[in-house]
Image 1 (cartoon, rainbow, N blue to C red):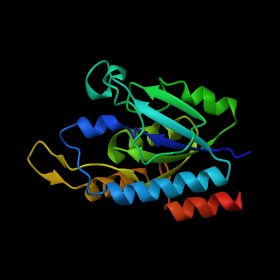
Image 2 (image 1 turned 60 degrees about the horizontal axis):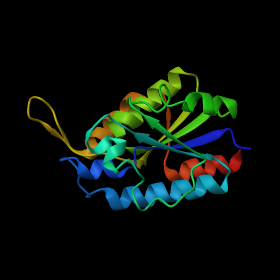
Image 3 (image 1 turned 30 degrees about the horizontal axis):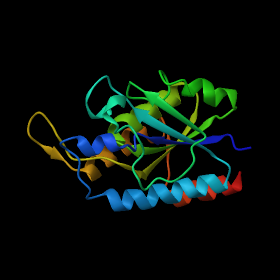
Image 4 (image 1 turned 90 degrees about the vertical axis):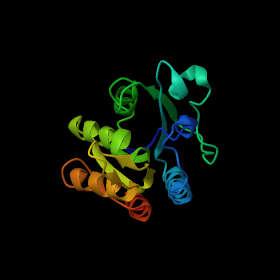
Length: 183
């Protein structure tokens, strides 16, 4: 039994109904995430679908948009809902992982610098070993209050900079899958 879990964070239809949604980086993200999921499945890694929910709007359960994007075809070991920016503190996921003696989290999903990064920081603080797979994350351009536009690549590089060697190990899909085979 693996002591690892792959967190697939917020890869949900809700984002398609936000004004910042764009598909420029979607094909590369889909390919990387699909490879990561398939490789983790082969190694017996638990698959965790995490969905962000809100009381109203496209993230509300009533909207019908809190469901996986159609390219995801895996069977999750558990599905959790969160109302905060990390996947662990209000979803019941931390207890589920500990019951199964899972101590290593592999992070993937949507909004690299928001829910993926926040989950990584909280997981590290809770004592998990964390691997952050940037190529299996997706984000969108963001504008600073001074008008500066940050590209998804710039946001991802910033996230990597603040996480590496403090909160997580950075790894490519290939690196993660090779490491799992050695365990």
